Every structure is written in structure tokens, then in C-alpha cells.
Image 1: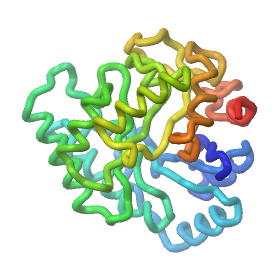
Image 2: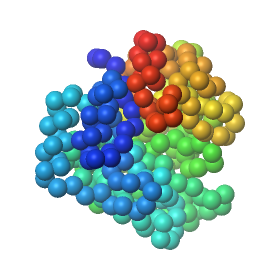
Image 3: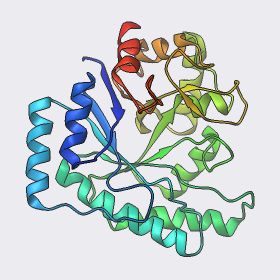
Image 4: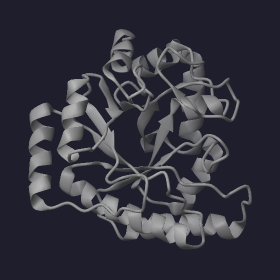
Length: 277
């Protein structure tokens, strides 16, 4: 199977433009927002949009494709934000199958330095409600977090996966966030140890996709600012190990790098990754 390497791309001009953009920089898989991430905009599509998107997807051979949920989402919130988070995800995950998008990659939010059992139970209840109100084939993918957000450790993600108890819940792992949280995947042995731990706690069948981002901050710093591949503090060997390991090499790898021109994920980042295999 050929390498699945893609990037987060803009939907300015319409969903189909994201497909054209990823093709232009040499990617074959894609992530994008279903609507502007700057506000509570609930995703909608008409038949013409779906038809255009599916035709471009087929012609350009872009697969798999994922939505990235809004950064405003906080599913542990017990008030208005929690409700809007839920409604936003239901809208997005409802249209995903029509576009042959696999589902939504979600930052679960933050307990705002005040984790209570009530907030945890609200988190679980909100995820369950999203799943109950969206199509069976639409995946809910928990992204591991950095910077004191929900889901920094494998143990925390494992508890959420267990308590939601749905085969539609998968995991997206971000290299920058893992590095920030003190996970070292820079050698074959370290990656094998990590994957064994992931399998034991969560199950490798839950691992769906990787975000490939270098880090501007030191190892185990708790900070998770993205950097271009090879320009940050993560050894380039880590990306090579992930792209060649038998367990991970067939997964999709999506970059969210700032870009060498500062304009977002670009061809140069993808070309660096391609040169490693």
C-alpha cells in the first residue's frame, strides 16, 4: 500500500477547493474544517456540493478524508458551550458520510483546571449523545491533547474510550502533542514499546490517523506549538520510524505545520516526509 500523506487545507471557495489544494501540494489524503472554526457555524451541504466534492475526490484519488472539529468545542462544559459543542459535532458528523468523509477528529476540551466527576460524566454523556444522533458510519476520533487539555495521556484517553463504549470511537495521535506530554517515539524500540502500551490500554484497532507536526518546544514541556518538519525539537527519525513501522505505516499521516512561508501546511513539508521513506 502506498504512503497516505496529506495535510489540513482551507475550504475557502468551497469544499472541493480543499481537494484541489491538497492535490496541488502532492498529498493524497486530507483534513479540513466543515465550517469556519472561528464561530459556532453548523455544517450544511446541498446536493450540488456533494456531487462536486465526490467527483473531485474520485478524480484526484484523495482518500481518506477527515473533518477537524472546531477548536471551540469543549464537551466537558455543563452549560451553553457544551451544548453548542454537541450540536456542532452532530451537524458535522451527520454530513460526513454524504461526502465520504470518515468523521470528525475532536479536541475534547478542557476542565479549566477544575476536574470534577460531574464534568467528566458530562463529557461522557455528550459524546454518547453525539454518537446517538449521527450516522453509524461516522467516526468520532479523539485527538490526544497537549497543554493541560483533556486527553494528554494514554490512560486518560483509555478511560474515556472505555466509558463511552462504542466501536465508532477512534483515536488520532499528534506527534507534537505526544512529544509535549513526554512520549518518545524516536526509535523502533521506543515506538514498539509505545504501541504495546497503546494496545494494552486502548487497543490498536482504535488507532485511526496521525497528525505529523514538529514542535517548537522542548520534550515533555507541556507546551504544544507546531513547527515545520525538521525545524523543531522532534528528531526527524521519529517521522521516519512511524512511516516505516509495520503497525503504523498504512495509517494516514496528516500535517498541520505552519508552512515554510507561514501560510499553512505546504508541499515542502510533505516532500521532506516523502524523502524519509
